[in-house]
Length: 109
Image (cartoon, rainbow, N blue to C red; front, side, top):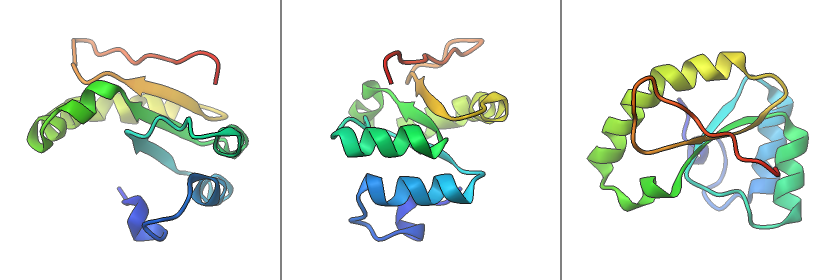
């Protein structure tokens, strides 16, 4: 796992780093960002081929250790789904993990 700030400047805009990771290939993004700041961001994401695991809004309301615990529970499913994805897309990860754990696939992206 690599933090975005370890590879790019902390203030790097999404349309700057998204195409770089898409071109390099082999990257998956886990983020709480909604990726809805504008057309340039949406275009960069669509054309990059990246798979984004977007943590739903409930994650931002939780404390650090609760977030960590939930991410650990989701991790095997995230890895499994990453292997199945081709061509990129956005997968919404709910905060609450209910067995067997189901992702949501947002429409209109």
